[in-house]
Image 1 (cartoon, rainbow, N blue to C red):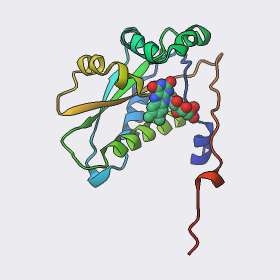
Image 2: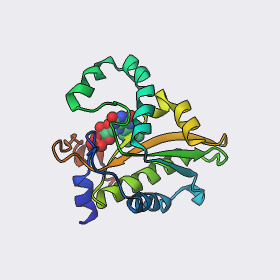
Image 3: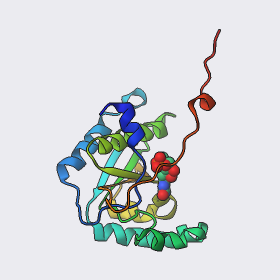
Length: 189
Ligand SMILES: Cc1cc2nc3c(=O)[nH]c(=O)nc-3n(C[C@H](O)[C@H](O)[C@H](O)COP(=O)(O)O)c2cc1C
């Protein structure tokens, strides 16, 4: 599939197939794509911490949920409605927690993390997997992630990528995008 078709096909998944674990070689391919991402001055300021124990993922998500629900109470009904037990990781069978090295002080670091994340998202899609990037663990569970993954002090946990197969009974839905004409301008000099 060409890249534009893949980008058109991709959307975030909040209903993962509980019966289908992700083979390790595919997780490695997703991270390999992340490894190849460009970064400012080629600093590659990232580290990937993978958790494949779905019980542990659920336990971690549950511990983060009260903070999320306090800030966004309207999410309370969503778990039952979607048939998921957790609103942070949405019962994903794999999570990849991405940290950023603090030692590279250049301004590009957050963009670098976004680029490695996007490479991983598109690689997953190309492999028939689905993803959901989640920032909520940063807001509501940074300590839990840092302790569980033993992230060293010279790194900052940034974001989690949920990974798995789509539940065929609950396909992803598309969220709208602004039209290209509204977000682009040719500067005709
Ligand atoms: C940096 C970032 C953080 C996000 N954090 C969350 C999150 O914590 N929880 C969630 O349900 N979705 C999260 N999302 C998913 C966005 O809601 C989603 O990408 C957006 O609504 C567009 O939908 P689509 O990915 O299906 O095209 C995040 C996406 C990005 C890029």
